[in-house]
Image (cartoon, rainbow, N blue to C red; front, side, top):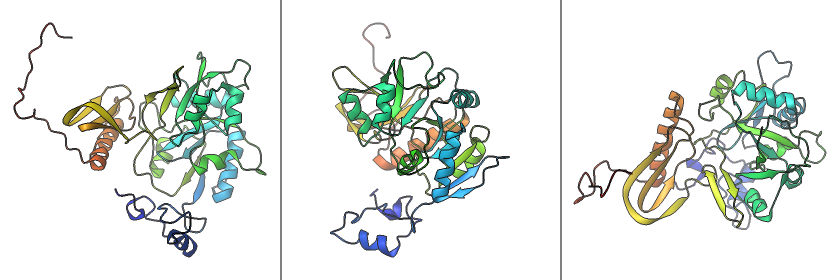
Length: 339
């Protein structure tokens, strides 16, 4: 803070003359847009094939075209996004989805799917106006939707035994380009898009780490050279019958936005649980949730939780105190048996 280019992950991409002119022009829509960049001065894409692959490494538009062709051929591609890597495959390809489920040791847990657009969503799920508003909001969460009984076919291993699908729309340019622009060779319109990690581990954000930790899971890597400063999984919600949202996993798009508390609190840190771990900092009448971390049964996840706590403290300026407030006893008598 504040959000200035020099203190973001765009600091390693100096603006070219054209971008600098737009950035400095009060009449231009890119005036003081901190991440402004173009093909000449911005982040670059690259495709890295897996060991023993006949596919050749590629850059920029060729990297995208190769990744799209691999997905259409039933391969699994690790895609670097905004808050970490995803593992992607064609959601209609039974063999590809089963392979991903086996490699990731996913068990019977459902996969989320990313649709190219709203038309693709409507072909697989029932979509109300409130659910469409949630899907298309700037937060771009995963939204639980009821599966269409007469919908377009999806692999049975996407969401086994469930009448619902977790659906999201593209939320970065890379996602949009991965589905293809008009005139591009056709590719899958619905992709499984699950966190890029091994079972029980945190989402991968570092490029070198992705090549090692996701080896054996992905057949190729579609990456870019802009670093990821803070890991952040996709958020998950459902829309209630009255049109209000129930957030089931609070992460990208929802944190670190503060929530107002009904009573003031002293500076405090809350953490837990062992499964589906998250953290929360509170002070005064506000609370700040950290991003979804995951299950705490692995040393790398414990380390990720520690980094997330340090990052949230830095953002909020909250310094939790371990001692009770002045005048408050260290223990409190209970009226009645423990709850």
